[in-house]
Length: 227
Image (cartoon, rainbow, N blue to C red; front, side, top):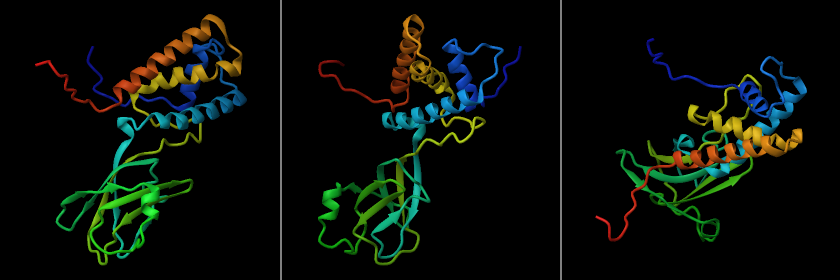
């Protein structure tokens, strides 16, 4: 039989919920998903995905964005553009497309600056992740600009699941991790204990650990005494 040559397998929120409930043995293969049960599980799934953002940034959530400079401007509202969860690094890109890595300020360091509108080439930044108003502060500021930009490496937020038909904002290799993670979170809701609960918890923990290991950049370690 020929290979499919396709790589677009995905699961909707509904399918992941059904998967989790079947692992808990509370939903038969031929049983329809109850609307109230689905709504409660969808809420739990959203909560889990939002909480799991703290484990990152996973590789698939580490993305690149761009912010155009505005003359004599020290702060940039990122809510309507990048809306980052966190910023990992920023480079100032000049008109010749040369990049200058910028240094991260702490909040205290930035707000202690005596003059936040000093002019020059931006070399430092502070990111304030306020709810609903994530703001990027830069220093010094450019007095005049043409095509300069800030190139931003940031932790992209996980999309909400607003509907059971929504696809889940994760790569294929972590779909099982999400399914077992949801099953583990639903144990309390269904009062499940004993062997089934232990099996679910062990599998969820194993998959979670594997995801943590896999979704990281490979590193080279130097061990003294080894050639």
